[in-house]
Length: 142
Image 1: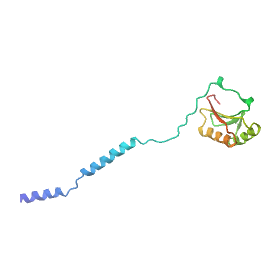
Image 2 (image 1 turned 90 degrees about the horizontal axis):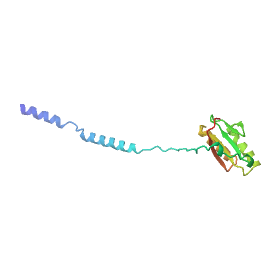
Image 3 (image 1 turned 90 degrees about the vertical axis):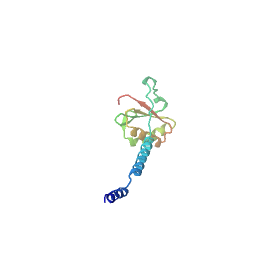
């Protein structure tokens, strides 16, 4: 009887599921995902603004017919020392282009100004017909 009892016990072990191949597979997947996750790099747009030039190097070109558009630190826009709505930049540039067709437009932007507002002002200036739109960063407190 003892032999019979031993054989039954051995047969029960034979019916168990062997988990070793599944663990090998899971560990291989884990290693694969860890290796591929290291090489994933987010792609983004890096905006590098040019450094501001010292005030003594800035040229006043008002006599040559330059339109200065200032974008202040808080996002306000001014043209010729008066605050304007960003949507009015296009009309002002069109008026300026009618008077002086070859005159450049300089956007003087504070380095702390919202980037979206600076881009919007430059787009409005180009939509107004200005082909020569320049960006001049400044750190003055505006």
